[in-house]
Length: 178
Image 1 (tube, rainbow, N blue to C red):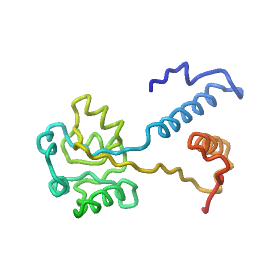
Image 2: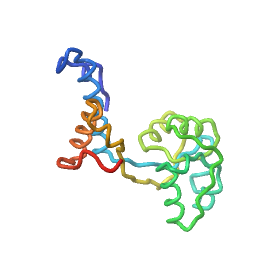
Image 3: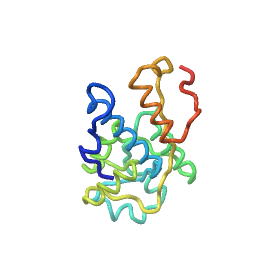
């Protein structure tokens, strides 16, 4: 979905409309796209490894160097569940990174395989930078977490309202335990 500057910056509320309406519209478009498309991850590898992963089985994929996220990350949970559900010990990380762009770049540079959002994997594969392991798509849940005491801050309150609207959570609590 392409979004132009004219979609984001419109005359609207407040003395500085372009600074309030634009980010709100961008956040709403992003959240809505996640609702429509879902959040799917793919196992991605460097483009040069195409032949190596195309017919690989679970133990072979697990034996490859993995770019993983820190222990508390959702990615780590997804990798663990993915391999355990196929009776294979989850791979140990060869590299740790906690930023999606960094992870994708490390794959492209040939350091290993990792879970990558479907949208990123498709884009980078179309550019010839990486390949995905066929037939594996991991759907996950998106979470939005913040400190309960900050939910009354205007910017965060507006964002929470947009998340509730996009995810159809009207009536959902505005705050949970701190």
